[in-house]
Image (tube, rainbow, N blue to C red; front, side):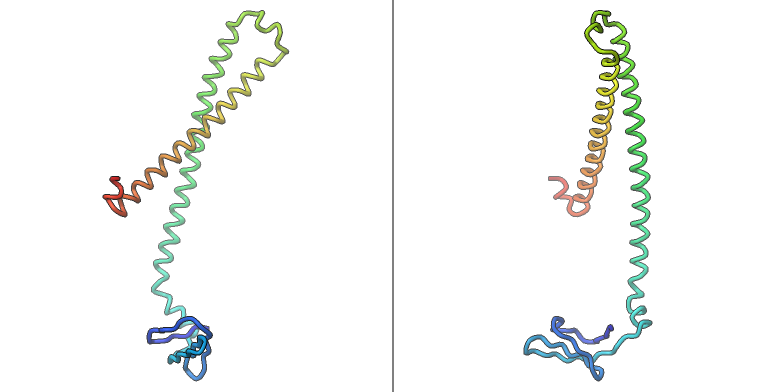
Length: 161
């Protein structure tokens, strides 16, 4: 149950009891009595109604930023994957061209498939490193930029330090 008390409550903590249109708040030996009116569900809704447009606006902004974040994350992942694939394709082409120029005796002591396996695994590891480093780098740049913008919004002198 919710009760409306018109005057300021000086002692908000304590045990509360409502009877005969009065709210009794007891804390230890102290007791404060305030005239109070029990609010119905409609009155309670009307009391909080001025706050609802602001709450709806914040929920809407949160949803918009969430959708933007989802698309930005997708774009970042897509761009990093395609960039990494292009780099690895060029790297593998260069490595295979180099392998073609190696003399035959280089392959005499190597098991079948060892060279191809190493080229594939090593370039895949480089691709993973490439994606991880660029992802962290771009996220870090965006975070630092956001922090500096927030600093300037709070205090220009603080942002200039």
